[in-house]
Image (cartoon, rainbow, N blue to C red; front, side, top):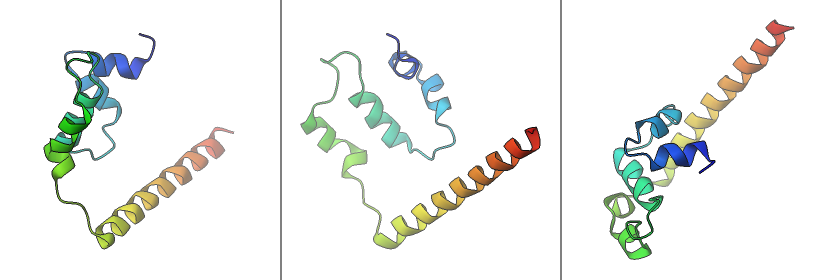
Amino acid sequence: MKDPYFRRLSAHDKKAFWKIFSSLEISEMAKDLFEKMAERDPKLRLNISEIKEHPWYRSELLGVQEIKFELERRNKALLELLIKEKEARKSEK
């Protein structure tokens, strides 16, 4: 297995995998679903019916305003990060 992300995800303790993505706000239910969908053993991996029955899949969706607010928040954070990276590169020169 060459993929370092999948290797971490396939490990018994998945904390190393999720640590990589710690800056993202991922719910425990979403993590659980992702881990079960990415299960290495196909016999244990969720099928489509099981995915559709998962609590995260069946949870309430965000409204248009909530989605717009969240996307704007993420866009602002990304722009701030890009500005910091650009400033850091300038100071290295």
